Image 1: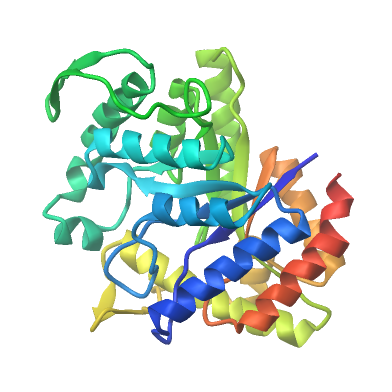
Image 2: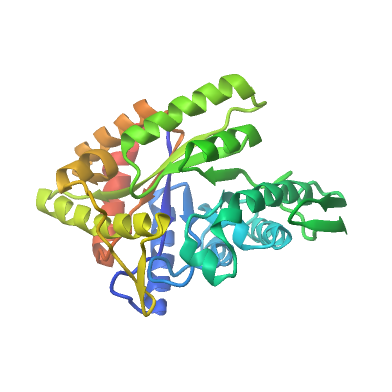
Length: 342
């Protein structure tokens, strides 16, 4: 069985109003609960139309209040951009107010653009990440603790509130490199991979690395593995191909931000073409989960066989796809695709 979640980046190539973007987000979250999705995941981004959501735990709290069963999650909180004690307090507050319907995705971050504007260097992110995760786990212990690291020095401290789930909500790490996957497995955290610009064969490589690390590390509990993909379900081949081109915007901006050739003009993220890009057929085959219900079932089955997932995260809203098309795609997915994996 696969657990299905949905994901909000809250991007806008055409720089729609913040009010419209947030109204759409709440609508999609409530539709996700009605349609039987298990989770909604929220991404943290700053300072461009690539993502209007800078405080994912804050929006997750609001969505939890507007829903009854849906698990709310962050995918991700960019840990090195914040003081770890503030992250711990935000997570605990969210978990309490949501009654334990919380999963926490953490990430190291990848955008020079965001780090520079907060007075930080991306090169420091790995060291900040390691110390911050140590501090988070100590903060969730329910006991006073101290910490003496190279970056953080914390005198005796105890956080209030403590999380609803003990010792803390499930932790997922978005891992897009072999180093991140290794660090995640060694911590015993769940792994979330995929995303825009990651072909299916790289996810299969990550799975082989994951299995090798499991045999070496032998964690007390086998971490879960989730994959995130742009998803669009339609009965029309032409509509599917048009949706793939919308996803290209996300892929271009993601890769430009990751590889530091981004362009942001008056806050608008520009989709800079990569030197070599897949054509539409290649996008549909290796990067996206888009097509008729039967096609989408085949694509997810292929991912399940190659990557061994327990969780599949659907990014239904990408590019500038109109809101009614997104809701129709979600409904088709819930009715025609999800039952094939129960």
